[in-house]
Structures are given as C-alpha cells and as structure tokens.
Image (tube, rainbow, N blue to C red; front, top):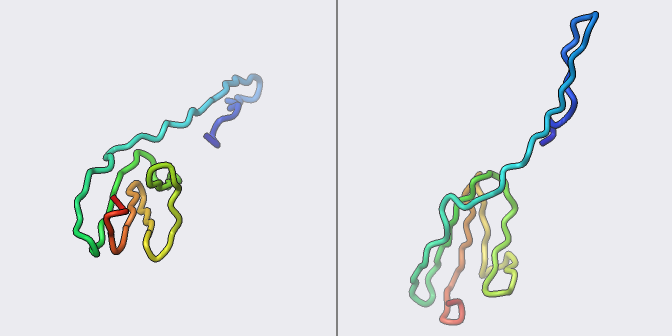
Length: 93
C-alpha cells in the first residue's frame, strides 16, 4: 500500500506520469479452527492459519475477549495463530 503514488518516466524533454494505487488484499483463513476434544486437566491448542502474516488476532470465548494469563497463551508465527488453553475444565467447553 505504501507504494501507492504518482510515478514519472522522465526523458529530459518530456515526461509521462501515471498513478499507482495498491489495494490491500483482504485477510482470509487458509485453515480454519477445528473442533477439539480434551480431558479435564489437560492442555489443548487451537490453531488457525491466515492468508497474511502478522495479522492481529483477537481470541474470544463466546462474546468474551480472552486475555493472556496462566490459563490462556497466545502465539503467532507468520500466518499461524495459536491459542493454548491450560488445565481445561468443563466450563471451557
């Protein structure tokens, strides 16, 4: 997007100009979340893959935004976003 601008070809006696507009690609899911099953007290990892690396990700449980804690850990490597839930309990379903 930062390459959007007016570009000029200058040959001394004449110039030719053109405007370049770069449109951002929408971020899509390359791999969506998969349903998981886990035993109480264990750890579970939810993973999704995005089409654009470094895209900010917000993890939610229902309508509640999750925050990093001893219970929840967030990782992001390039296009892969992970949510790790520790010590899962029935209320985490």
